[in-house]
Length: 202
Image 1: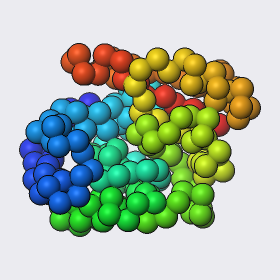
Image 2: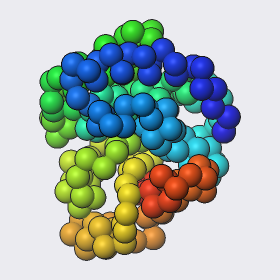
Image 3: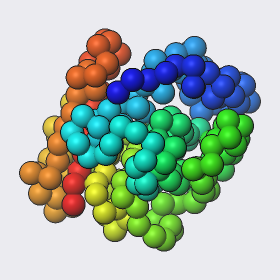
Image 4: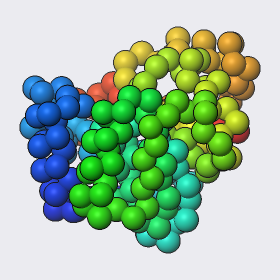
């Protein structure tokens, strides 16, 4: 997947402005928004394309639910890269969803809907649920088990084996339905050395 950095410049400017008012990204990390946050988010798309789950162009009409989106990660970078898909960004913290709303509106995204709610209260189903390490997998899975048709794509770092074992044991997930994909397969940077896309299939 080719990523045109210039497409994200306006979003980075807005995130930087908002982060000075509402801390949604660590202030020491705000200068690395592209490298550590946008590219990390886009690793979900790279995984989907590389493994044939979605086409690389704009024509994919998939639906995504981003749970615990904070200021808009991973949902907004994915929405920029996949304008043919529809994204619902959900966070229970109002000030965070306000940032996501402002950034998505500020760059003119028409395929993003931002919702201030707990995910358990949302109705409807989505092709994909995405999230960026909002809690342990065994806590997360019950929130969304009835909300996706294709899979969960969860960004997580560190030693994930124990967490996956707990997910399978406590939530009845078949271990054969879980794939762990190293982000370093795509991004050759020490920052991503122990970061993964965890795909949980139906």
